[in-house]
Image (cartoon, rainbow, N blue to C red; front, side, top):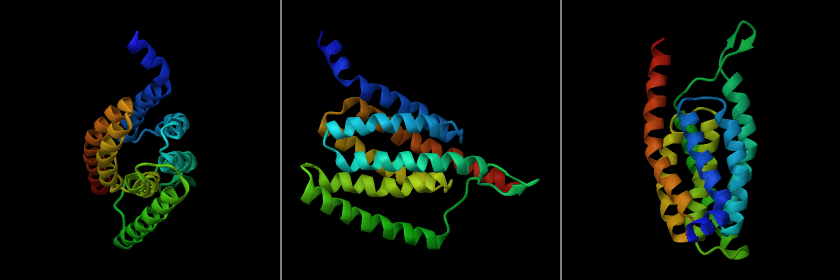
Length: 201
C-alpha cells in the first residue's frame, strides 16, 4: 500500500525521470527527436521543482523549453550549405575565446541567481541550486550548438544534482541523475569519436 501511495503521489516525477533517460540516449546518438522528448520532460519537471521549492531549477526548465525549439532547428539546419540547403550541424570544439565568455557568464549567473534565491524565495539550498542552474544555462546553449564540451559541464552538474536531490527526497530524480552522470561520460566519448570521424572525412 505504501508503495502504491508513493507512486500515486510521485507519478509525474517518475514519468519525467523515465523521459529523461530516453532523452539522454537520443542526445548521445545526436537524434533530433531528443528535443521533442526534452520539451515534454521539462514541462513536467517545472511542476516537480515548484512543488519541491527548487525555484532556480524550475526557471531553468522554462529556459530549456525555449532553447529546445532553437536546438531542434539548429541540429537540422545548422550545418554547411549543400545544394542550397543546410545540412545537419556537426559536433565541434568550443573556441578558446568563447570558453572565457561562457565562464564569465556562468560566474555572473551563479551570484545573480543565488542573490535572488536568498532574498526572494524560501529555498533552503540557494547556493547549490544556483551552482547547478548557472552551469546548466550555459551547457544547454552549448548542447544546442553542438559544442562537445557541453558534456563535461553536464558531468559536473549531474553529479552535484545527485546530492541535492537526495537531500530533497526526490529519489526517482536522484537515480536519474546518477545514471545521467555516467551517461554524460558515454556521451562525451561518443561525440568525440563522431567529431574525429567528421574531421577525418
